[in-house]
Length: 148
Image (cartoon, rainbow, N blue to C red):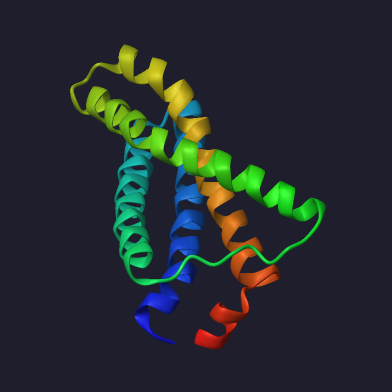
């Protein structure tokens, strides 16, 4: 398996790791542990940055496969995919603004936008894994299977 063929698997793993750190960061801030919250959130920004680079490389070098599922599952897949893509685009400036406010010590502004950023980011991370499972595991394209 070439590096490009491995990237969807890596990307799904990075999304899963991001989900875990997002959840932990939420747990830590709710319990008042700002230091652990900060560590989790810095980690998830780093992991998500690696994901973004990996995803762009993958999209530049690999074909886009048509979803193989049929019937109702096809509708579900495209609903998840479309919402995932739209929110993945939106999350980049949201995370940037949330992080910027935290780094500047503007915690009132940080908290206001984080109320929207965190659930959106969680949704994007979780649906990224769901899209991967549906596209590459449950309904893999014959072209992808042939590349393995």
